[in-house]
Image (tube, rainbow over all chains, first blue to last red; front, side, top):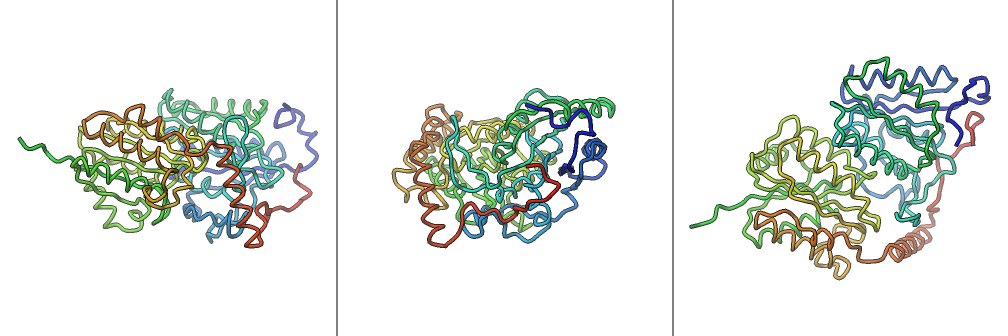
Length: 206
Length: 229
């Protein structure tokens, strides 16, 4: 599978788009710095980027009403800031989700936004290999990169995060998925270098 | 010698205020535990975040609990955001007694229990982080068939779930963890996945035809010059 980003940036003929969902619960977290690195890295490659600080948005939790399946297919009825970015999802080439690793998953802040992505899916079920999934609504969906920040590089949490990333990317109808984990102890240089490598590597099919 | 009464707190982790699968499962589990003499309280997390008084009451009861049960739906393969928020707060300020135990009953809408895997793992991590003993887990599938109704009223579709919960309640009341046979029973789907999918898709098709809706509508589709497709 071809790398996400062409090595020669002049090959990019159209503007690619990226959303960065910042799941930091408070200001000045290392998560903010990681998001800023990703934003500038993508912008340098000609991406049109949008860095969403989820904590600054009013996003109410999904209430499981299934209105996006049974009442207004593909649309969430909750009127809040979610209406501004959820419709943009199918138009992104990359969706980057950044958060501290919390119980092996993402923070409550980021999860609020993820839980609101049901409009991207129909509730028509399909059996693929050994697990049933819902069929996606849109023909093209972004590649999803999950970036997690661990407190102390705990092995168990890292494994659960990778499993979460793999499973959630399928539920999100991602066209491909990648996952990066960093530790609080990692320096900014190491984080920058690893992110650059990651954005150039092949992505796995979700 | 009289046995000291044991206290159970059940947390229903659905984002719905009422009529959720997590509530129904929590209610059945509560009734089974009551048969073994437990004093029980059940809280809806969705209600607790809306009312400070209820939240404070929940925290007080958690501090008195010998056993805490989380009945929770799977959202995007993990805890719903609401549950993570509550658990994050509990990690910051754990109210639990030293000897208290914790178990999780996870439910997903799809017909395979493996979709609960991450939630089960997350629950174990939570228990470790707050010093609770992990008493086990039950992973339930085809949760949509329950849809807020009492489990007893649904009949054979919840037979395995009810049996699993009953066996779990027996073991927990003896101070043991949830046994493997209870977990196996509860995880067994009532309908084979391919039949469940067929029925669910057919019901959806009937409903959308009746309402004159397009189940595959793409309201946010817009072909822009800047998008590679």
